Image: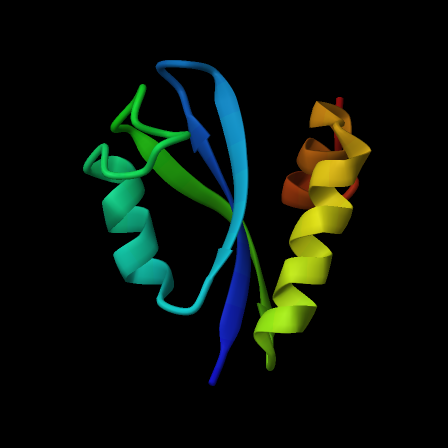
Length: 85
């Protein structure tokens, strides 16, 4: 099995969301369809960044690492590969 950590962005609410899942296509579809509690305020979510993991535990740890930073700059650093500004 393969698991993903992903970062999505909505232009309409100007926000990023970090999550993890096993089926990335299905999960993004749920975000875009307004069927996810924390992202239902928008339907224009786009995938900006992904990382792959072999276990759910690894993906969960990485998701927490990213969220723990509470930093938009860090998220943009990941997305743009260190080319911010």
